[in-house]
Amino acid sequence: MTSTATRAEPPLTSDRRVSGHGVRSIIGSWSRPGAAYGALADALRQAVLSGALPLRTRLPSERELAEALGVSRTTTTAAYDTLRDEGYLTSRRGSGTVTTLPTRLPSTTGQFRAAQGADDLVDLTTAAPFAPDELHAAVRDALDLLPRYLPTTGYFPGGLPELRAAIAARYTERGTPTTPDQVLVTTGGQEAIHLLVGAHAGPGDRVLLEHPTYPHAIDAVRAASARPVVVPSGPDGIDLDLFASTLRQASPRLAYLIPDHRNPTGTSLSADARAQVRELADRTRTLVVGDEALTDLTLEGPDPASFAGDGTSPHVACLGSASKGYWGGLRIGWVRGHRDLVGRLTVHRGHVDIGSSVLDQLVVARLLADRDAVLARRRQQLRERRDLVRALIAQRLPSWTPNRPAGGLSLWVDLGAPVSSALAALAPRHGVRVAAGPAFGVEPGLERYLRVPFTEPPDRLELAVDGLARAWAELGVDDDVRASSPTGSLVVV
Image 1 (tube, rainbow, N blue to C red):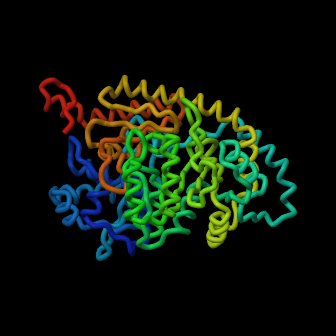
Image 2: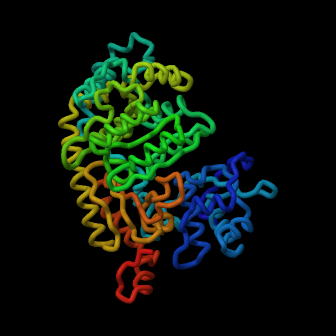
Image 3: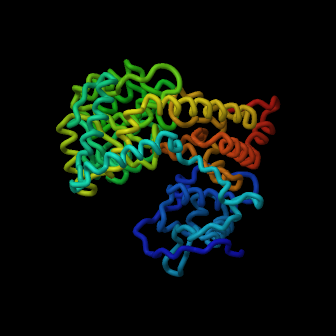
């Protein structure tokens, strides 16, 4: 087999090793029509690209993986050979087979159709919008304000005073009285999550998460060597009875929820449910964190009630981010909580980060001042794109069942069959990359579901759905269903 990419040469020695059964859990439902080794190679490649199989991780032997997957050793050998040639695996006698990445990808490779270059790949693994038109003016205004901070060191561990004041004013406006000393500005929402988890949970401690949930929250819990404990969320949000019993029985150090337009399902907690969550937090003395990164992206209906309520509970905290409502290039997030909590987090943060970019903070302060106009245009754009993707799916993938979220950035699509991982592995061949359902869960499952963001421009969204339709046709699920059902209707077991 001829190599189509230049291989990277990372050190082969690695403390990370994944077993055959571990690989089986990571790649999920990977089989599809056609050569089994090709389907397995696609699934492993997708796992490396998505980070599910970290780089410099030693894979099981071909024999061990074959036994775990119930396939022949010829299949695993051919799949490994394919990925070695492409530069996704590297091997050396005595050192095993280790995951890596090609140092470059050519304009056309075996992953894509011959007529399709790498530049045509539509990446739907990230649900985030492009910058708003108002960003340029906000940057100009921020540059005009910057000179007042030049005579300082530029280090503001708690955040720039005027941004903390702007965030506090926004919470107060939403019915949660807040002062600037109750706000900590962070370098993005992800840092806020890691700070909250790292300051409260360590090896073996339990952290409660919804199922499904934001993958980076799962990463933060695992990075702290804590133990995620999951509570399912359905169409009406989290199961409050199970949430209450889990708080009592598991005694988690922290609970992480997404109360508004939850990533990936789009559901929100009702005002009554929020009140019950706050009451449970106080009763069990458990810190409950509400991730409000998507709160401002309500597309239909009234804006959601503040997760923090009247803001008096020391056991309820909120975090936010400029990435989803404004732009991911602005690495600014924040935590709103009790003064004691903000103080502890500021000290904890000082071990790794002593402040966020002053210029970025000034830009976000300007965008918050003009938020009504910026968000109105953003919401209208997202409404149109949500409805476009739903219409395209109805036309080209009629067996799929997408939801219609009242806010957020993505659809949660029921595929009708447990093939999400196989589809995600196959999709790059057809010009689109997506995150499979299992990426959003701590426990195995979610193979029936696919997250489809609607943040790309309309022409790119059309290309993405076209690519998904081609990948779906190659997967052959609809054909299998028709063959197994005399009426041709979908049979769910």
